[in-house]
Image (cartoon, rainbow, N blue to C red; front, side, top):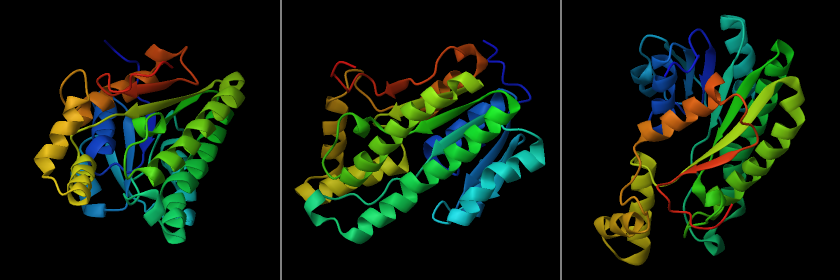
Length: 256
């Protein structure tokens, strides 16, 4: 299926590895020009092939984050899709978190998401259309041990996404949220390693616990998450906005 993305301009953050890198490559395969931003210049340059253009960006840096959208527009004339992907904060129980952990989580997840979405949606409204995609986590709906920082800030992003979708829909801008479940990335390996250390188990045992709770019986690949993101952002999903889609193999069992 032709997703109608040829010639579009896309920006993806945290795009050097894992889901972000897979999303960048998938958009490029559909004919988009992709601005792939990451704090790790060498890593994002490895992602960069053909239509994937690397940009060094540390989301901790508010001034640098604020420049991503205007720089992309200055270089390419427009911005059709913005994928707001933010790194995961420190894992640990709520009672062991510090004020510094919460400040760090805000600077890693929520503040850059607000900055990017605001700039992206303004640009898209001015040009008459576009799509903002927030990559969050199923922890928004089903918290997991040790994930209090991630679930709290990503839940705030989820609420913001819904509000933004309502406000910008009349301006021709769509907003969606994709909530990946367990995915075979370095981040998931870090999560299972942290659980292993906390519970005195092996990492293989923690992986088995995760998989056991997934009806499809396996982790997702980063490419499977990317396929969903790219479809939702494409003109083939033109009547979808305000939606939050869990891509989790059926792990969340609660009703919407």
